[in-house]
Structures are given as structure tokens and as C-alpha cells.
Length: 228
Image 1 (spheres, helix red, strand yellow):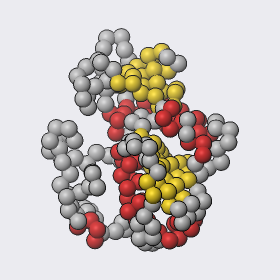
Image 2 (cartoon, rainbow, N blue to C red):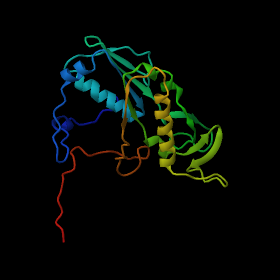
Image 3 (spheres, one colour):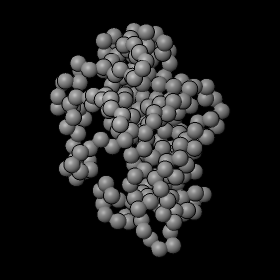
Image 4 (cartoon, helix red, strand yellow):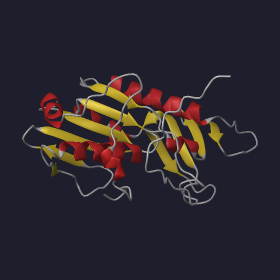
């Protein structure tokens, strides 16, 4: 797997929520539930990881047919026995975003973010799906110029005189609002929408693009500290 881990120890662990029980994932039961359905994952690389994990879990039952159009960011897989389709729609901010020539190139380059306009790469195709899983967040902590109705209303990390500097959560909240409003406004959409909550950064000794890495191979232990 292109973005896989270097170790295999994680295969011996399972999620165990605190104070409740999480039954083992049953791929047979899952595929029966979604028989004849279509499921879309909309978001960034975290969303892509989610898809890869699901396909891995379902491989005990069936290996899907890759029905993609030669585009790594927009892929489709078909489980023919169950007539079930999984699709991915890559989008950095959920709303329309354009990389600008302002500032340095690379991960710190500025984006123009149109908070009231959904990203057409997913918005134009999502009506056909029965389940939509939305996942995004990390890209909102990069330099941004924010627009509403084609008018610049603020920025993030721009420090330009006269331009209001707003927090990342402002842009994230507005983008989610536009996303849900767009989906709910689709005349023929009858599916269900799920939001995968924001995943915090887990890099150590630097950011992901500055030598940072995630070297943990075992989960943290739950420790009860004595009260004084």
C-alpha cells in the first residue's frame, strides 16, 4: 500500500472503547446490509485511508473490481456479488479552492477558498450515492484567503494590513455548512450523510513536511493517576 506503515504489529491490536464493547467487524454482515447500495468517501488523505481500511476488511469476503478512470484521486470499486460500489472524491477543503501564486510554493502556498461554493468535483456527482462519509480538516490550517459571494472576507496566516485574520475553525465551520446545505438541497438525494470528526496531527519532532514522523507502534496505555 502506497501510504502504509513500516511495521505489522498493528494487525494484532483492536479498538476497545472505554466503558463499552465494540464487536468485531463482520464483513459478511456489512456487505449484506449495503447490498445494491453506493457509498462515497469525500475528503482528503484521511478519507482515502478510511477507504483503504474498509477494502482491506472486506477482502475476507470478496476482492472488488477497480472501476476507476485512471485517476488516483477519484476511484471506484465494484463488489459484483453484492452490487455494492465504493467511490472516493478527493477534495482538500470541501468547498471550491484555488492555489494562488502568493507566498512560497509547496505546502505553505496560499489557497483562495470560496466558502459559499461547494467543490464541484464531488458536488456534481454525489446525488447517486446512498451513503456519504465526509472527512476533512488538516488543510484548513494552511495559509488561506477566504471569500464569500466572490468578496474577500478574511484570511488565515496572511498578516496583510487591512485583511482580517480569522481562525481555522471559522473557515472549517463555514465549509461544513456549505457542504451539508449543498447535499440537503439536492432534489433527488435520498441517502445518509456521516461526518468523520477532525483527526488531530500526530507527528513528532517536526511537522509532516519538516522531518516529522509518527514512530509509535503501540497504543498509549490508560493510566489512572492517584488523587492528592
